[in-house]
Structures are given as C-alpha cells and as structure tokens.
Image (cartoon, rainbow, N blue to C red):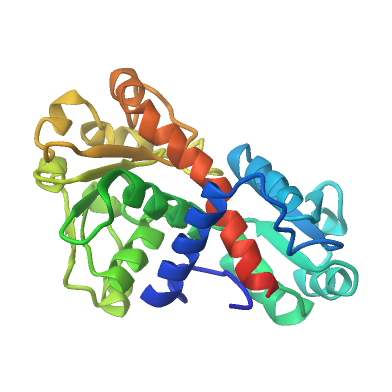
Amino acid sequence: MQHLLSIEELDATTIGHLLADAGRLKAQRGSHETPLQGQTWAMIFTKSSTRTRVSFEVGIRELGGAPMFLSKNDIQLGRGEPIQDTARVLGRMVHGIIIRTFAQDDVVQMSRLSGVPVINALTDDEHPCQILADLLTVQEFLGGWKGKKIAFIGDGFSNMTISWMWAAKHLGFELVVACPADYQPPAAFLKKLEAPNITITQDPVTAASGAHVINTDVWLSMGQEDQQDKERAFGPFQVNAALLSHAAVGHIVLHCLPAYRGKEITEEVLEKHAGVIFQQAENRLHAQKAILVAVSR
C-alpha cells in the first residue's frame, strides 16, 4: 500500500491486514520495532486537532521517525501557494506526508506529485484513520462485525458517515444511518455506493433497534459552526438513554470526539460508555502506526 487516501479505495483484505497489524503493534507497544528510523514525516494541518496530531506524533516517534508539524501559518499554503508546488517541494525533503485539510483533492494531488507516501488525516469527504480505529474497537469489544448491526445517528453525509458507508460496502456488515431528510446522502452517491446492506432512515429508533454499535459525531463539522439552522434539525437525533433502550443487549457506543455533551450525546450516555469511547480514541494511535508501517514498506 503506497498511500492511505480513503476507505473507498481500500478492500476487505487490506482492511483486515491493517487491523491485524494495529492489534499486534498495540500488544507489543514498547518494543524496538523502528521501521521509520532515520525518516522525517511532514504533518500538514490546515484543520486544528487534538487526537490526530498527538496520535501521529507519538506513533511516528515510537516507530523511530521524526514528525515535523506544519500548520497553515507555518508554510506558504497559508499565503496561497498551490498544493502542487508544496507537494513537489516536500517530496524532495521528507519521507512521508500526513495531511489534515478541507478538500479531498488536495490529498489526492499531494499523493500524485510528492513521490512519497501520503496519509489522509481527515478531509471534508473522508476520515479513514478514524474508521480503522473504530473497526479495531468493534473487534476488541464485540469480536468483530459479522452478524452485527451498526447504527450511525447524525449527519448522513459527513466525512465520518461516508467513511462508515464505504467500510460497510467492503466488509458487508449491516449499517443503518439515521439523519434528517435534508442531510441524507445524495442519490448519486448511493448509486455509486451500490450497497444493499446499507439503509438510510429518518427515524433514529429504527436505526437503534437491535443495533450492536451506536455511533455518533458532532452535528456541526469543523467550519460549520455558524450553521445553527442545521444544528436545530438534529434535535431528535440525540444519542440518549431512551434511544439506547432499543439497542441490542451488550451494545457499545462510539463517538470519535470531541463530544458536545447535551447535543449529539448526553452526559449520562457518554460517561456510561466512556471506557469504550476513550479506548476508541487510544486506538487512533495503534491504527495509525499500522498505516505508517504499511505505506513505508
């Protein structure tokens, strides 16, 4: 695997290999496996981050490499230099690039022109590193996704939902997305996806009923903070105790964080399921180490 640009471009075999390696690296954390020894990895973040930045910096160091964090204010991208030029310059100096930005096309261009491995650390279209961490968490708590129903409650066409839909397409598990009518995936996307195991509904109870995994995310993605009309549309889609009463016995709740308690999830539910949610956050480190190893081979 040369790059990780999206879940869409992966397949079941590759996902399985990455999760197996993530589990191995997690179990062996502290060993002296250093495949990035002598390498410098640029981390371009035009979107702020806690978990993504910390997990990648720690992961690169634990694998023997050196991270170089570059915010938009640190490099000429912030002054309008084309992504093409930044890619060509960095590719001659660093061994790999991790980019967290708005446009998916920026990540694609970086991979085409830099000549070094590129990892998508989040765009408006996909969040592949998070989904791999989430799948690892499902494996750890439920033994896998075969025969399981996974529900996503919230924005039906966010980077998280899109990535979850591609994961369901590749892995074959049942996925039900509950979202307001105005925030459902476009028909053109669903036609491209062509996955009969994925259902879209406007009823959160339908999604939660019998679900083994209840997944949610913020209602307003980064850059949408001023869209209060959008937030009001999501009131009935809160993950709370009443909604979870319809879920399967032994269900888990996932949230990729940060969480706005009292909005998409209640304080009560988040704290009750904190053991899973914060293990999910930790798994970003292990999943991303597996990605780094895979693209650096």
